[in-house]
Length: 426
Ligand code: EPU
Image 1 (cartoon, protein in one colour):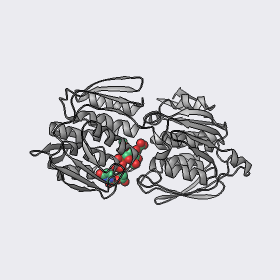
Image 2 (tube, protein in one colour):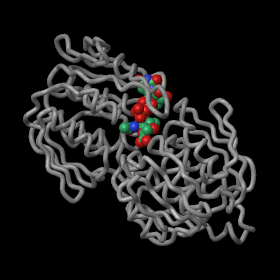
Image 3 (tube, rainbow, N blue to C red):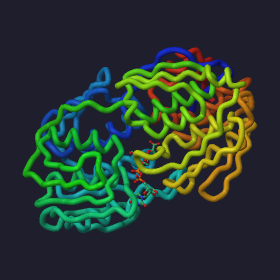
Image 4 (tube, protein in one colour):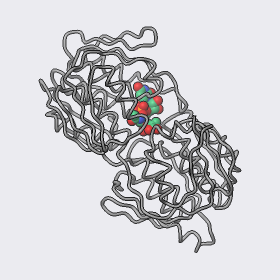
């Protein structure tokens, strides 16, 4: 196992190119299962999760070539319909093969993911949706064993909470179902929009992109896709927050500022200069030092898109440990997404958890001190990286395989911005 070492206290400066979005790439790869032939996906990030998903595709009989962020998937020979516990337990997004497998083969057996470091994370909405579409589902020995009765039927589906992968799974299944499927309270995340673009390019009939009501008219068959993955908004946000926390000045390129409305407003409120163009964002923390070195305490509440993203909660909390007063971080999406708090406290942060909220008593910009800390999940780990970059002294983060699930070339990208950061064997 590898650990990450950071000698903190250096402002990040320079220009940084953003990779493709993990949570768009995974459903788009799953969607290739819907049509035989060769699909071409561009801007696919080279991440541990991408590699795990490709292994899952291989297990299903699918061949692929991946070179220079271009992924060619030949989905002609789909001859297996099972996703094992071994794969699903390392990456919950494996459940995204359920919808396409049911649509194309009429059956699928996928391991139930179980809980994870951020909460219980059930998939009951996916299962209920498929049952409404005419799928017989048995839960046996930790697996979802699903088989279509006669044919998948369009229906009306309502999500109690907008679920990202739930929406994606149902849309994919509905593209080849008989009749029309309506999804109410659907997720509006940009990654869902990227999937809809791809499916429309394959010949699917979908209305309502970017809204909470999606209407999918089933078609008889789909063609192979040619589609580009959208820029990674969570990576973009993580580097912006890191630049702010270190008192730096960065320009983030090849990103999509329109996908980060809540974060950009929060960063401006906290006192940073944030300028956005069509595909780049400039952040300057200089004004903070003019104002006596104080980052302004800023509350956040995580919400479904376009609200503040839960995947940027831990990172913003790290920033708030350096602010001038008290801020409240309210997590409404996942019940257990405060695993980073105990680690941030090891670096001197003052944070108290009260149910779904964390009260952060900022200690000013020089408030954190480097320490050995532990990664617990992907986004919690990136908050420790931010804290380590801003802290005085050395921070050692163990179990960094979590980070590699979602941040492409993290060490290279940070080093190019001037950070002193490297990996070592544990
Ligand atoms: N929920 C249910 N039942 C379901 C599905 C969801 O109760 O059947 C609840 C969840 O427990 C949660 C809420 O609904 O409270 C929303 O969960 P959602 O289904 O939207 O989450 P997800 O689809 O499993 C995706 C991302 C996550 C991201 C969340 C929220 C992918 C592959 N994963 O998960 O990304 O945090 O949406 O935006 O798209 C990450 O990248 O680090 C990550 C965890």
